[in-house]
Length: 125
Image (cartoon, rainbow, N blue to C red):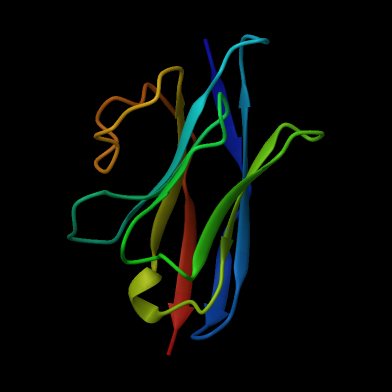
């Protein structure tokens, strides 16, 4: 069993920055595939970024490339999503999710079995 816990989001003006953190509590000495997803009202859930702890492979959605960065702090066993140059269209509920195997088709998060509680990120214009 894996428990995913992530930080609280927040509100920021367009052009600002926020950082979300995520920790997956589960079996030790295994690799995790961790992703950040978001869902805005009336829209489908979309993948934002992923990180595979096995080899450090990252993925970023086209809509956030150059603005968002996913990274890991090994010492703290924590994943971070640094969000810069935020836009009003980034407003959504953000979720961290985890699983054990790397997934090529991660964008909709259908094969992630462990999810955090979700946190709101609001970007005002």
